[in-house]
Length: 187
Image (cartoon, rainbow, N blue to C red):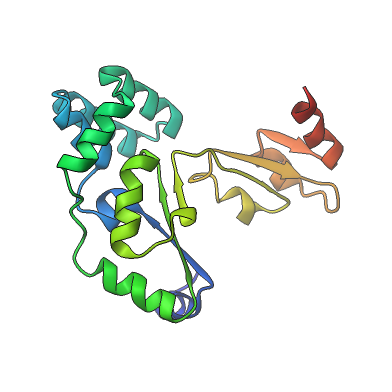
């Protein structure tokens, strides 16, 4: 297992760093704040807490929370204008230092792109480096690839070159060729 010194070394030499946004880059949970703005904050906060602690899937948690208040684009826009993000102290400096080292910085969030965009601008992360409310699928041949799920929504095991029974067991969908991956994309 990697110890703290190893992780610090990796941190200092990373090619890319991905930051979660809610309660990491900013001090609050963006969707909870939007829900407060819409008058259903307590209910959504409870669902957020349950989702974080009970292993509820991202999609399931997001759907349940949004079903409580269904914010329109106009409401989201107004919220963004009236509710400036509360950055976590020190985040701008860390992003700047990483970028000066040549490290690509990404913001990854289950929140709305429109809410994340001004946060990215404040901390100096390019808009194209925002992955907000997007489905990510990992396709790979190893257990380390499978460990990327979560945060990825799905893992597809690949055994086209090396067949690993442990990966085959772990994957909900296991393929042995790219043809198998291509077929569903054609329909």
